Length: 374
Ligand SMILES: Cc1ncc(COP(=O)(O)O)c(C=O)c1O
Figure 1 (tube, rainbow, N blue to C red):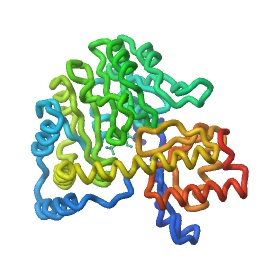
Figure 2: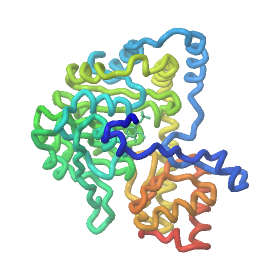
Figure 3: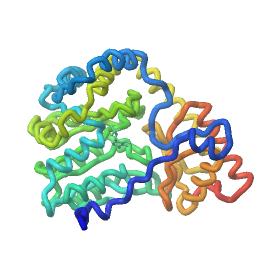
Figure 4: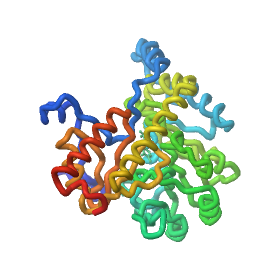
């Protein structure tokens, strides 16, 4: 009998998320809402739809493996050399490429926990040991939801090749500020690569949260990850990018690129999206306004929601998490529970968020599951 590597056998099996149309049918209700995957609720940008239609006519050919047009557009946008930019099949595949390019057996990858759930799995598959620095309360006495960058710096040793700092952090939405991030970057040894994962950067409104690409300049061991999946509305197309201060870092990531994995459609859509930046900014502003409304409505209901700099909010529901998420799902609202810890809720369109708020009120009126905290 064949057997997979032990590191692969111990990975959790893939569990697909619920589909809102299936859930609505199952519950016999007109509508279910999905607030689970941090997508934006807007339809694709008109220029993207047009670019896709044009590119579709050429899909008998392979895409440009170097994604030259997109790479140059990104380089121009950030004022860097194209040699510093690497597009990828979603930021998640760039995380995987980073893990593969920089890990050897016996090395470690450090990150905060809880954070983006793929970090430990990617480390494991790459043969590296994941090292986690627990989140700490963002305010005295509050729930743990914020990076402890001093602890993360202390977790870095000679075996650490890679550190991920997810800013804003998925799933808590909290962000670290410039002085602490600069102090952290100063503390990390020059032969450890720090990856600032800024998948949600476009939603940041706090001026004290630094732009990683600015912070990166002059620091050859820093790289930044961004994605077109969130603010730019291209989650279904799979395209993200890495910007590295040192072109040698970008070159190493390019070497583990799966050939042609950024499709022709993804490349064309990303270029068209960049050309629609004004519309994207308007959409982001609407998401941010709705984030504030939703956060306030949840706090009014007693949830200790931290300030979110992303397009989702975090409900620290502790031991009640699984029960509350199930109660919401029974009312047609799909969220992302982390059992024993909390629920991540994507900021949806206002009418979708109203369905969530009504469901929470109904749960509170009929069960004990909506009791905040846990
Ligand atoms: C922190 C973070 N990084 C990276 C990703 C990957 O994004 P994508 O692969 O869709 O570009 C996500 C997606 O949810 C994320 O939350």
